[in-house]
Structure formats: C-alpha cells, structure tokens
Image 1 (tube, rainbow, N blue to C red):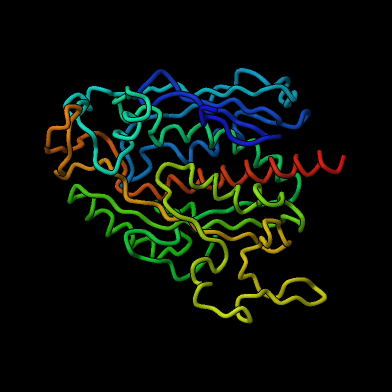
Image 2: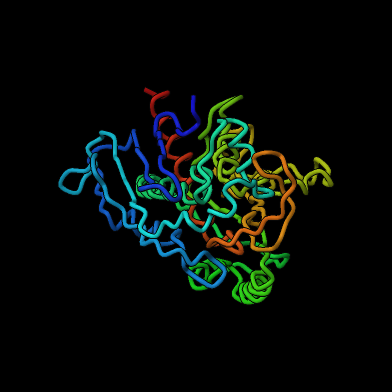
Length: 351
C-alpha cells in the first residue's frame, strides 16, 4: 500500500534516500538458473550514475552494486535478489540553508503535507537517486528479455527546445545527451550549457523503441500493456506526460489515416505504436515521454517556509541542468520490468 513496490509476477521494491546510508532494490520473481553477474547490473548503473558531463550533477558516486542474495555460483536461484548501493558522496550540509523552505516545483511541499515530516537532505526518497534501484532491477529484466529476443532502446529525442532530425542508434552512447542525432546533440549541449551558466535548467523528450515483442502480450481493461508502461513512466519523478505511436498527433488525423492497415505480412503502418486494445500487435513498440526541467536551480525564486512566510530561495547543491541523459537508462529499465512482468503473467495464464 505504501507505493514502494512495482509489478506482480516480476516484482521490485526500492529503498533508501538520496543522502542516507544507501539505496537499493529487492527483486522477486526472477527466473532461476539464469547466468547473472555483477557486471551485468553494473553496466546499466554506470549509464545512470552522476558526474558524466558538465550538464549533470558533479556528485561523485561510483554506484557500485553489491548483490547480497538470490545469486549462487553465478546463477539466479529464484529467491529474492537484494542489491544495495552505498552512498559515498552524500553532503546534506548543502541543504542546511533551505531545509525550512519548500523548493518551487519540487516534492518538498507535497511530501510534507502527506507525511507531516520530510527528509530535506537532497529530497530524501523523492530524489532521482531512488532510480538507481530501478536500473539495477531493470538490468535483470533486460537479461531475461534478451533470451526472448527482445531489445529495448531509449534516447533523447528533444532537449532545451532542440529536436533530433535523424536516428542513428550507434551514436546514442557517444554523446553526453544520449541523443540519436549527433548534430542535434551538439546543439543541445551548447544550449543547456548556457542555461546551466544562467543557474537554470531544461527539459526534453525521451523516445523508447522496443523490438521483438510478439503479438498478444498485455492484459485486458485495467492492466493494458500501454497503461502499465504509462504507469511505469509516470512513476519516474521528472516525467509529466507520455504518448504512444502518433500520440497526440492522432487528434488531427482521420480514422482512415490513423488506422494501421494490414496485409498478409501483418501491419503496414504503426500509428498505434505497437499496442492496440492494450495488447501488443507484433509491431515495434514506440512511445515518448515528456521530462520537465529540474526544479532544484540556483536562480532566485519565490517560495514559503514551514511557517508559511514568503521567502526567497536559491538551491546551491549539486544538480543536473538537464536530467534527460540520465533518465534514458531509467526509461529502459522500467520498460524491461513491465515487459518481463507481463511475460510471466502470460505464462501463468496459459498454465
């Protein structure tokens, strides 16, 4: 009931705070007997960790994963897998001067209203650092999906108002924005650098493409595949919207334009983004998410304190100017978690 777990047949529970002792995850439902090493998980965590470029937080966290259970002689046992990442560069003192104030656009205020108490040390549980556990769990789901021939790839499609015009998957991990267009990536970096130097932040759009999912995956009505992907994406702190296929562009199309025609080889077009009626249709699954600008900025803003008194606030800590490149591996991880969960649910249904 507390909202810290996700999934049914393949289920995760994350734990920890940004400036506490550690963050981590418990994974339950992993198929037994699968080869799994620390390096399988660490590879994905290294893509998410801080300090990767000028526009990301300079916090120095190695994010070294420790697997404490569920693995024996290099293979999954089918029992819960506990993974923990100890915080090595926590600095709560950076928040001393604003601990009595609420950051505009941040969960400071809403967490306080819900619980009557909040961890002001870098947002506590509301921090993006919580997603490290998701990425660790997603690495396990990714390995299981690979055995099914499924690939999941996300990239920054737009940032700071600049959109990519081309798609080259080979360049995504070769530029700091994780964009699929190297020319646009340079322009994005230049603009976000200027925005950072002005003590501000920028948002963007991340696109995700999934290949290899057969037709028939997903549950009817409330647990539609696209609904559960949407749930996964909107559970990421900075995400404010999602669309599949043509998405909101469909409102300006006619049915004859939007309907995906079929021939003897399957669907000819993919306006639905690979999911119809909440169930995969065998096409590439394509969706995009909207990522808001980071709320913790050093530019002066108006707010109130715990007593309701108007105050001026500047957040001086170590924060990302654009979170998009570090959200990319989180998007992939959450997508993998949804898909593996649904494959296991489908297998249970078929007996």
